[in-house]
Image (cartoon, rainbow, N blue to C red; front, side, top):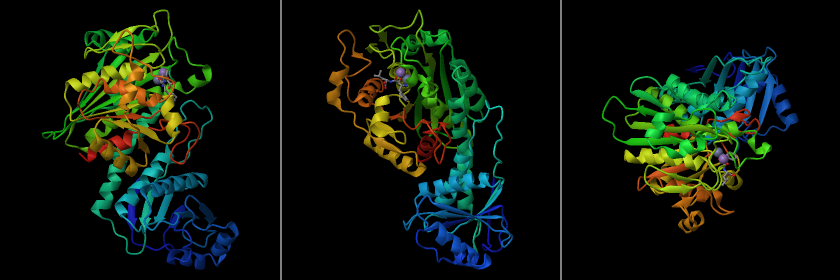
Length: 492
Ligand code: BES
Ligand code: MN
Ligand code: ZN
């Protein structure tokens, strides 16, 4: 998608779809009046009939019937706020993209006069368009993908291009392939996205200046004492992998970060088998790993001067003759032991390996992403991820970044009193807590493996996968976390 900026008015611009954002109850603004005159009063008639007031999320599509150089006109309701939030721009971009697809428009022109930061608004609009453009049609025999948007023109009388505007749009364009990659990896069927496949994809997509990828097989995993991963993999016919992606900037890095992603390519629950309904979407259980691969794949393109290492333990979780059993005990490389009482609480078992290994390098920050608990989904629903941290400034910074990207995060507490709930009678801890607060007890187990390193855990069980089409993402993997993590890294 090409973007450009033009100094021109609504009556003169030529596009397939002419988009005009409208603030609520401000239908008297100059561009609308000019359009109405050209459309011989029919636009205001239509506005009245359809009761379009500019309420946030509303839209009105109107054919220009040869009275304008543009073919279709789209009014987008932006709501009442004086300064429109990024997320409202993002959703407006997404809506414009969907309406464009509906009328076969490939050239879009958008009247651009934001009250707040033009850089933020333009970036959010482009981002929304690209988020809504994503489709996964590989396995449909009769799919007719909608035309890609070829050109997006920001315009208004007096508008000129600026380096700052172009830079903020360029950042979006450099980030978005990471989101698409994560979505693709999640959407592929679980028999395609195996641990081996994830390793190959990491190799294929994480390349460029300063990036190296190591993919460890079972022997190396055993030699490295990644015993949680081995234990979860025991029920499987597929070999596990441990993926390590390293990015080193060309100059001296001023921070070192570890990203750890849960890579369960399919979660059947293991011997603690899930009911079939709960298994339907369990190919999503590598979404944390996919987000790490997606984010790492963009680092050479974003040119950040920090060192980042991605760690992705990956396997499926299946019951098999050799599967781990409730009652088994795993000994970790930091010396700690976990009694496995429920083989369906497997994410924490493999993340413990990744966290312990990452902690040995003493990075400045560790961030893990995982579709860890149904309990987090019960607490926060499907739009919001849970954030846990042992370091409040880190948590605050991540919350600010999430606010900017529109990937909603909400902080949940690491309640130390609940450590009682994960006490084991035979080992240092057990892998499940009581019947309440399951997202917290899971996070407390992870915390045992990070030492005193500033750490944040994102439980993305809810937002990783859209169960139905949403404004910014069709049904399927969302790539949640990629944008927020990259945003965070860019603030360091
Ligand atoms: N992968 C699941 C969590 C999950 C559930 C993610 C629903 C997305 C949607 C995880 O491995 C799991 O099974 N957790 C159990 C933990 C329990 C056994 C303590 C859960 O949440 O039920
Ligand atoms: Mn599970
Ligand atoms: Zn799982």
